[in-house]
Image (cartoon, rainbow, N blue to C red; front, side, top):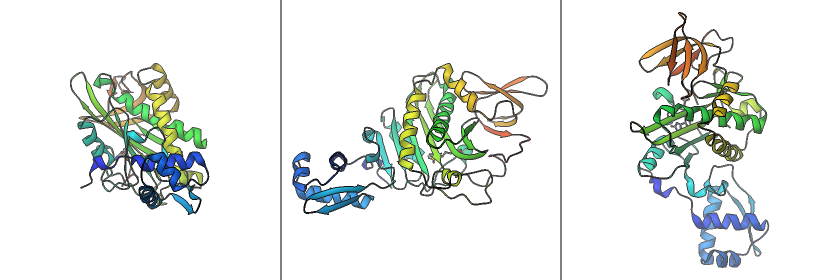
Length: 332
Ligand code: BTN
């Protein structure tokens, strides 16, 4: 079993990278060791460990020079956020690791990142295939809101993902209620929120985000896509995650503001569509006409009655393009 508490950033490695980046050229072992207050042997060992992580560091009589950094989502790649990050080359599910951490009391904004997951979970107990090349993380939030408003967190996270895709690549990312992000009607990102709450108080909401970044999607999968497939080239996953974390912070500050719902409505492809929502305990069929202040979908049924779906699976009916929830074997 992996020890979650060991997956924190290594302070010396962090400081060495910072010093090498700031210097831009060669930095001697002696300078590094006096800067870090540690022995040259220790510097050498940490440099070796950084090389094992994928950093290309040139060694010469002049010292060490950072040549390149890997496109891994290592904490060192997110300056200023390192202390909030728990990083796994591979884990069962970042949701499980995050739950354990949240239960132990880690702070708001803690991020659990994995390069790959062996038991990635989707909504409704579906499997979420998580090979290397994707972006998989869970953000631990402790919002001071009534549990009734928790669905707004789904909307917030999906807006942030769409904003990141639009900003970085100019692709028209759109949102399907409750929290799928689509490009050209194909799913590129899934979001899973798990809440721990009492009657009036939210203890934590863990928001798991899976993005098909540099993953290959088989040809026959007509309902799913990846950023690489859409762009015809690999993306920088660390750049994507840096921008996404900033977007999340921005939209989180608007969580309870009308702007959030306005933005979601602008990006939504669910509103004004005929839908079938498989909600806990009921199936609602009708025209999706709005979202209410809690983030629930309001559906007008054939007989004119209005129904609210707080959560569930939403199927767009009579679509010309394939639906992201129909005939899906597995979503990555
Ligand atoms: C969906 O069904 O659309 C939600 C998919 C959520 C996948 C992410 S990947 C990171 C986090 N860890 C998991 O096991 N699931 C979520």
